[in-house]
Amino acid sequence: MAPVAAKFVEQPQVHIVESGIVRSTVFPNKLRDLRRKAGYETLTDFLRETGLKEITYIRLAKIERGQIFPRPDEVVELAKLLNVDPMSLFIDTAEKDFDRESWARDHTEASLTFRGGTREDMRIGAALRIRRRELGLSTTDLKKKYGMPAATASRIENAERPFHRWPDKIRKAIVKMMGGASMRDIARSVTAYEQEDRLDAMMAELFSQQSLDQRHNASLLALVQKLPGKRAEKFAAKLEKMMTEKGLVDWSSNLSLVAAAEQPDIFCEDQTMPVLEGKTHDGWTMLSETKKIFTRNFEGPGIALKLDKPVLGMGIPTSALLVFELIDRSEVKGEMVLALIDGPRVRVVSARPAGRGFKLAQVNPEWQSSLSKESNVRVAKLSQIEMA
Image (cartoon, rainbow, N blue to C red):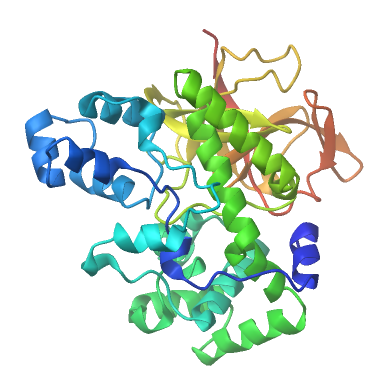
């Protein structure tokens, strides 16, 4: 059980956000208003008349509806086509008069108004997340082991796909994953986790207002910090100050991040993979995709990334491209460089034998732990390093 999540569960002010449309709105923005003001009534008009090729219609629609975060280069390109400053696309969601639910309803087409199921669907989603962590599996692993697509698992965990809409194949996969023989066993698992005081903690992690604010603001901060100009700098400073004052930064350091709806797993199965970059805070680097690509020399899931800080001291410069291969914990050996993966963020550490286990360490900032203590993260080993 995550200790900080438990702390919030014990407090009566913890509010579980039941509105699915609010939970799935991660990037409120002014893109639609600016597009129409520029004379493009529809997205089709915008794509056709500007000749935009780098962003597909589907992705652009999701960005405009606030369902996904754009990449920094996409923000810059859209602002250029609309003849505005990149920061003009942003809404200051920290302002007191901003109403996320009103914005979401105004910017969602009728065919897309459904966003999440009932509180029972949230309980099932929380139980599924607990079980997956018990098994030490990623959503990608579920596809291989149980035949359940990663995107489907993510939607169910986040109560984006309610129980009554599960096809038979998914029901059977989840029953098997939960170690049962029938659908009744899923209900028994939910009840068991509740009696063990684990369900409320996971509900807080997935659906509390504090958790949602942390995830949304952390991703927003990582995006804005990569944009050019003084307005972006001021916005980032204000956002970081607000997060610090509200305790969102400290809270997140002990709480697993949950990927936003439909956000892809950061591990890539293809031989040619995108290069990831990000901003580091308290030793964790929040990753985002770039246009750069890299071809690795091993099979299986992997990630290629560049750090913005020398977290292992002088051993690995920030100019180096690090390529990690997803491994099982049993494959960890002494003197390895590992990546601890938690949603869209990574902590790069060194591993050394300590008794029957492994001691994990990071130099900047100074941090120590053990592999057994980091049970809620996936582990990848450094397989390739490319020096600039």
